[in-house]
Length: 420
Image (cartoon, rainbow, N blue to C red; front, side, top):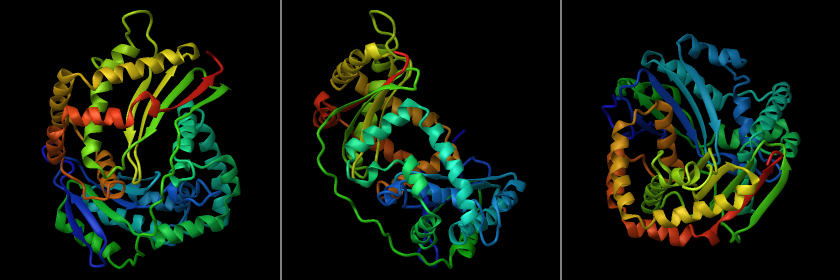
């Protein structure tokens, strides 16, 4: 049972100014040590999309201390732990999960990955083949292809349009020099934030972090804000793709992630619309009053970025039901934002579901790093979030609907499958 607030962090600084966030009194065995760099696919140069993701792969091919992938992972795995990494649009996360007694082993491995990666030509050649296979697997899903098309339209000429994994032609065009340049600029000398999450002695962990990371010298943040150009809503249709069903994706640009008031109101609206089998959208799509269900798999969500968020509704359906599904979504959304009873129920449910939640260390790291990188603020305790929820009004929800979520605001992407 969760007895401590998963997002109530202590903020500290190493002697060189590097920020560390620690939450080490949680009922979680061991410690997740994370390094978060404010660099991701949006920092790829034009024509070199996928460079950040490729760089993440290359770090694990060998470092000065650990000559290959086995040598990197083995010390941590012998302790029963594991090491992992991921690349997103605006950040890269490197993490290691170990028992508290082994945290120095994890810290040394992460530090070597991010300072002394070898980035050898022979490893680059082999890894390009791995990433090409990953690309094929990633785009074997219609929803991933639709998201690429939607981002390309809504973030046109903006780095947030970059596909995290890259494109076939850009993956082929990358050179080991591109990887080395990205690594040197954004990882080896780039700014980062440390996170330590789990159950351990705070003083002991801080001593370890200071010992391992305290002598690093980092450059100031390199990224400059990019202006978003205006885009008109559009309907994008791709026919006869090798997918078994048709996927429909409706999306619209919204406020920046740092706009906390609107972000929390959007959380409330999202849950009002689709959370649970009693939700209006579930009933409208899975169990309509007349006829068979329109869809089995669907999702409405809001993804926040520094300059803008993206609200999107995605649904797998048959091609003949595309227009009907789209209409049902908009009709249901219009009803929900005026439903005072549903609004009240959801606000109560958010607090109670938060009290029931049993957070994993990785989920805590994701939420805390999102606050730091995309929102530009310290992680806020869940108790503070519940206070924000309590302040959301029906007028706040109605404003979002009118300002951003009217049918004329949405771009629609239809990826028509070969089986309709």
